[in-house]
Image (cartoon, rainbow, N blue to C red; front, side, top):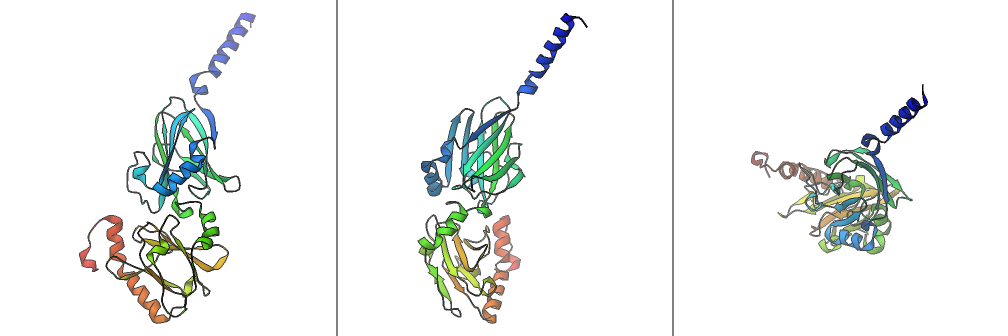
Amino acid sequence: MTRTTTMLVAALLVVTLLTPAALAQSRTTIDDDHALDTEAQQAAFVQEGVATADLTAPDMQLTVATEHDDAGCDIDGFHSDLRNDYLCVEYTEEVDRTIRLYIPAEYWTPYVRENVSPVAGDQSASFEPIRDNGYTKVTFEVTEPGTYAWKINAEASIASGAKERTLENIEKVTGVGMPNASTWSYIKPEQLAGNNSAYVVRAPNGTDALVMEYQTASGEWAQVPDEAESYAPVYYETKDGVDDRVYVFATSKEAPEVRYKTQAEPTTQIGAAVRQIGQIPTRVEDIFGIDIPFLGG
């Protein structure tokens, strides 16, 4: 091989390595260098349920919202806003990138998920807690200008702030219910009002002996579910390692009255179960938006 031929082969190899296909995918580490990591945007999220950040390098807008209509993304299909928050990215550049982004725990509790399916765009994302659960590392690809969005698991977070931080401080800012075990105790609507929307019930006998109901708009009593559901304005949760506390949350500022017994007699438990069964038609109608008159009500 002549020297000229050798130089030509080397030049072709360099050109091959520098083709757009090889250069198109670059890694961009935004990390926490964005306006979502500011007290102003975190306060806006607590008060309004939405926070945004505009970046110039790369040229994109970030939005975290509790409702998909506020996310600024073209999110199609049915999505329960009581069960999901949303992360939306509006990307305007022509460069393909892999982006690494840190979202503070004030927006949602960090948790691990791989290959999170998009609700807008066609790229999945991965979530990973970092910095002692202070942030979620979000990694995703953008392949062209457009909208990219993913659901956030709201059952792993509370919209007004990080779940673990809220649970750790909740008893400092709300009353702790100390009921007579065999009679109804009541949580007034104002005790579940505001952005924290939480109340602590002492349950020395555990949740198996607990009956908890909320008053519906028709004045009837319905069972409080143990996780956020679209049909119920309140729900309760327990915390790992804490056996004698139940945390009651409202899903909006318009909370209903709640009553509970920590050691309910069999007749009360049976009555609660019957009322729970009676709520099934209402749940089906709420979820699917249909009227089922033959199921009663």
